[in-house]
Image 1 (cartoon, rainbow, N blue to C red):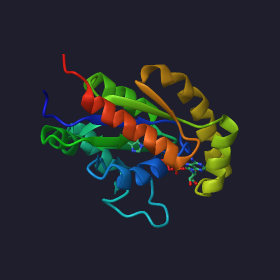
Image 2: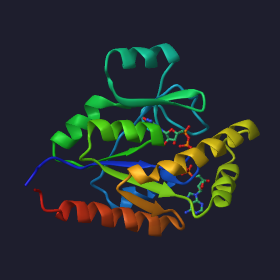
Image 3: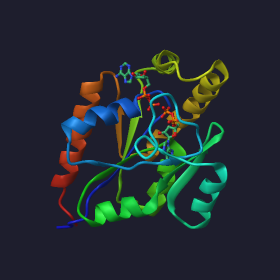
Image 4: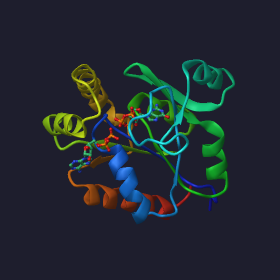
Length: 191
Ligand SMILES: Nc1nc2c(ncn2[C@@H]2O[C@H](COP(=O)(O)OP(=O)(O)O)[C@@H](O)[C@H]2O)c(=O)[nH]1
Ligand SMILES: Nc1ncnc2c1ncn2[C@@H]1O[C@H](COP(=O)(O)OP(=O)(O)O)[C@@H](O)[C@H]1O
């Protein structure tokens, strides 16, 4: 039996509730390790460097790419986002499960490098509900909301590349489904 940890990727359109579901998973699955991404996006109110993201200037981010420090990166609505490679590789080598909360293009790049990863797509109950959540969060201006919604429509098409689809109708239900997936993956017979 493999002693490596699971690499779990949670993806889906902006506003579907990835961040909210990940926070709720912390108490339900306490042993899960969370990858902290690097980004060129400016911090939002209350966000802490090294906790929510590693906030970088564009030049710093480009040098991380150049030095092959990122497992994947993507440009999303005008900013770069990327997953620091060493932390992910060390965590799974130490037998711990890690979860990456990333957008859809980046998730597909991780799949090329780690096809054995577990790829979970979080879906909204409907596109109308998705828009209500982005607007309700109050962090984006109208132009960014429109841009994120048009990206979301394209992203929904990519669900077929994933192993699991989880509807985020209610946070606790979505978390339970993800916990069940993790339990099932640990019970899999390794062939
Ligand atoms: N490819 C990739 N996407 C990321 C990474 N970190 C965060 N994201 C995604 O980038 C998108 C925008 O993130 P953010 O600006 O924080 O907005 P929010 O997640 O919608 O609140 C979201 O879909 C995130 O999941 C990363 O390291 N790589
Ligand atoms: N199941 C849910 N039901 C209702 N609102 C939700 C649900 N999940 C998340 N939200 C709300 O939707 C908004 C977007 O969630 P967030 O976690 O920031 O999304 P993402 O990280 O995917 O961009 C937030 O205001 C959040 O409180």
